[in-house]
Length: 203
Image (cartoon, rainbow, N blue to C red):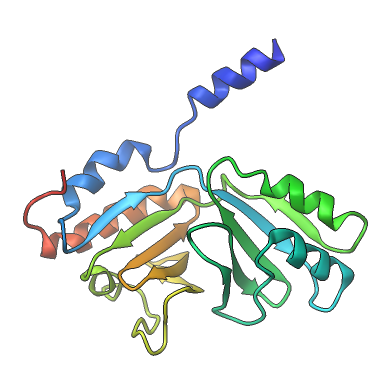
């Protein structure tokens, strides 16, 4: 019975922006700016003090090391990446279905530190295209110039007056991570900000 219940609950799960998929597609413009959700990404919160046994164990287990300073990202969007949130706080992001939390808990063992599955805590939105930074600049106070904010950098900032994690995953692509409860607000703000560049919706 428990197994059947698990299968059923997995089959009916809904991502924070699933009901907004059509609106995001209609608000996107091919070759200019596009918005979509990266649904069900694995997200794991990690805390460990640099130089401690826990830090070393987690850095080895995650496979990318842990970032050392603000803005730094260890790894890349193609696999597992770890974003710096604070001197002893990090967010590991991996593809859907990754058993990353369990692996890191096992690696940490009795060493001081913390590993928490946060996959349901934030949504992951991807904004891409040459106009993407122009859209972000309408509300984000961070310096988004490539000299200040290069590829594979991530910071905590604000967008549409709410806190988000902003990760530049490519030359023309960005991941925006608001809290799940702010997803609808963020998506609607982005669609409105993208309307300036609208022509033909992406099919």
